[in-house]
Length: 258
Image 1 (cartoon, rainbow, N blue to C red):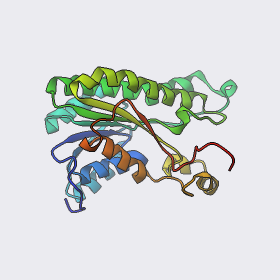
Image 2 (image 1 turned 45 degrees about the vertical axis):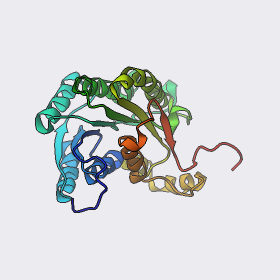
Image 3 (image 1 turned 60 degrees about the vertical axis):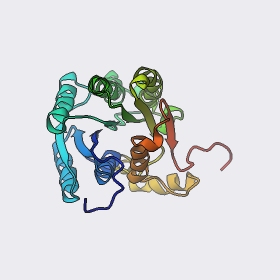
Image 4 (image 1 turned 90 degrees about the vertical axis):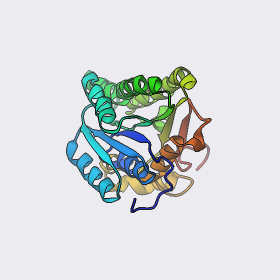
């Protein structure tokens, strides 16, 4: 690899969903720097290709598979394509997610709720099921990480559906950790606070300074802040951690007077 890494995932294969931008983009590159072969998944092929090109330029290996992870046929194609190309699966980062058309519940459409739950909760469930069906028979163990949110336990006006989708992830992994643990497979969540991604910037540049001022560390997070934590959870350094939802928010949600 041209960009120096520690090879903590050397010989491993990782699937990253939502790998075209933001946290997923950063995580895919971080995995590649640490020696993993990376399968990049998302609904839009163009940003996936751009990220794959960056990984190849680093000297890594990447496979692009475009598809909606809430659809069973796409999940089968993703898992099958990864095995066909690389022969194994060791890590899954379920990062694909949307904020959707939120708002007060009396203004939301049923279709908006359905879309949020399908992508944010059903998608990780489907991908986890597909990957476990490969990991368990292989007998090599593995690690799965999902992107939840600080809004799984907090809330703002208009996040009823989004918060529910992320709280569902936090509950889901506790049961899955019990199912997967006997096979040496660990399942955890990262719960980002306010992160500087295109999703955040879509609300306008003016929202960033007041959010940064609220955090104990005086800034919003970067995609790399989350990617580093995801990487760690996928290494043997976190070999005794499973079923946990880990808040990574720079102290944004510390309660009390400000």
